[in-house]
Amino acid sequence: MPVYVQHEVLGKVQDVFNADALWQAPGLSLFARRPLLRDLLERSPREQRGRAATRCFSHVTLMLPQEELDDDRHLTRGARVRDLAQSLAALHQKDFGDLLGGDEVRYHVVGSDDIEPGEVKVKFGHAVYLPAPGEQVQYTVTASRDSAIWQPVCAIYPNQRLTLVGLDASSATFGAPGWPFGLDAGLLLVNDGPDAPLELQVRPKDSFECRFDAANGYYVLRGKGASAQRLLLKIERSGAARMPVATASAPAAARSAPPQRSPAVWKARSVTPPAPDMTAMPLAAPQPATIPATEADATFAPVARHRITLAALALPRLSRYRDTGAQALEVGLNGQLLPSAPGKDNVIRFAVDEADELHAITPAGRQRITVPSQFAPIENASVRLLAAPAQLADRYSALLVLPEGPSEAALPGTRLVFGRGMPALNALRVLDTPAYLRQGDGSAASADRLGLSRNAFSWEATSDGLRVARQSETQALYHLDEQLVLVAQIERATDDAPYLIPPGHHLVAGHYVLRFDA
Image (tube, rainbow, N blue to C red; front, side, top):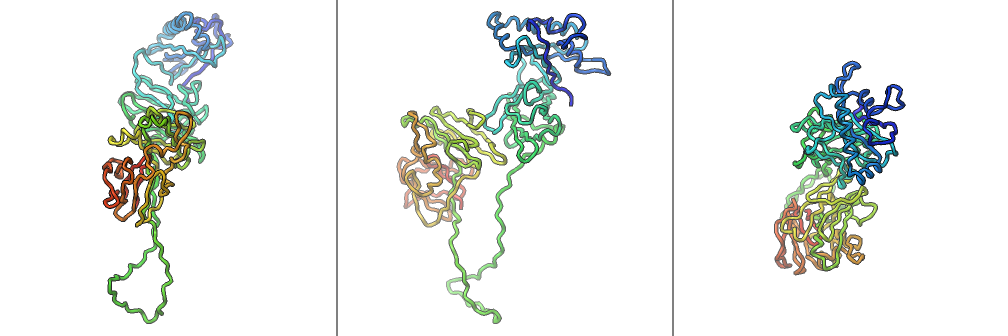
């Protein structure tokens, strides 16, 4: 594997801002204990024919002790740093002018707390690029371990052809936060121009797997083995919503389609012969003489075919409840992506504050999010955060869609009441504990006190749908279709004239988006 990033440490010098002392040692460099910058560039050419160099590298990054840079900024406003970069560029142009091939020489000086006093590190190579003044960013690269907290990795410029992402900046162009694949593994990004999509190459080839998840718009990097760790990499073109998928010249692992979750399949039951047509006056069917008449010993029990499922949670706008002292509401999801109290067993939490800002919280940190968004904190499952329908936007910040929410059977022929003080479907009122809502005085309260009446509505499951009757004049009720699109706000619904929610549609009451399944 070629060396994409050359990373070297120069010998200690008395003055780290002395360009001549960093460029070449006095006398014969052959007898120098450690080569300096000129010798390193000469020994590691960009291109060569046989043993003769035909082209040299022209972009170099220098890392100096951070304390030295701070002193220079305080005393000279950074003048010594600028002089060092200009002087080294002039020496580079003077000694290697015939090997530049028209490339512009660029030097960049940065500070590092990991460098000893009097020590200087340099970095150059095929995957080291310094942008020109005013050059616009073409791509931005971010990384995440859980698809919720995204941390910046690097920017890629139009003329930056190769970028190596790895563990840290000493072994790659840029280090990715949370890189789990070790020091020697890297992901090479190949940029062949503004009209060509970015290619991704795993280096070395079999270090880890890389595939593009088209549904979520990011790359999934996964190590080998059943318990292998993963890293998500999002590459966004500047000024565009999504970057194009890698072309046919990209590795097969990066082009493969994302795996789809297998749909639930009902097991086929044994075929039962159809029963005879039993009318009000059935005719006696002749019985074979060889079969003795026996009494059938069969017991029939009703099967609950109707269910009510918690399909989503409607996250409120806490600014509407400022008088109550509500300061923050947090909803956690456990390893099965079911709602749970905020705690260590959460793989992800969603929070809304008194300014109606939404945040995602994971072990990697806390980050503000927007809607719509999609998160994949665990393998083969995702959580969607949708914008509330326009007519509900003044009441709700977002709809948190649950992949497989809890559900309860709904026996037909029984009319029950749903509400903060009622037992019907209380297992679906997952926010009815003090753990979710934090108030300004530091106390906690049930989140159901925001927007859900003690007696919100009555309901009855029927074959044609869920019949709903309003029980509280102040309770807001909304009817959403299968796609969570608003159908109507339920204004009039009484016991004598209930409102009908068709199977597969949703009812919103308080924080709960309930789906009727028949």
